Length: 111
Image (cartoon, rainbow, N blue to C red; front, side, top):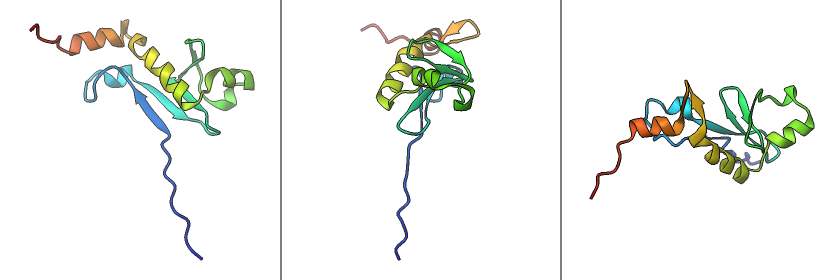
């Protein structure tokens, strides 16, 4: 009998407009997490993004009914699109990710 081959599955993506290594990146990062059955959740600090673009507290399946889950679980392409759209506008301490990006990323030189 042969041994089965190991299966490798990507289950999480980080989405941020801040570059890797930026000290503020963890504060302004959205996570896209696989939740099984081809469905992905868009999460940040205990909240979950809905199809309407609104964040709601609570990300665990057992906390919600099927209608809520249908509004907060997506195919991977839709989840990544929603996360990319939301990334510049997420807030921390009264500042958006775009504010943080502008403070920490130098403007291109005029040429």
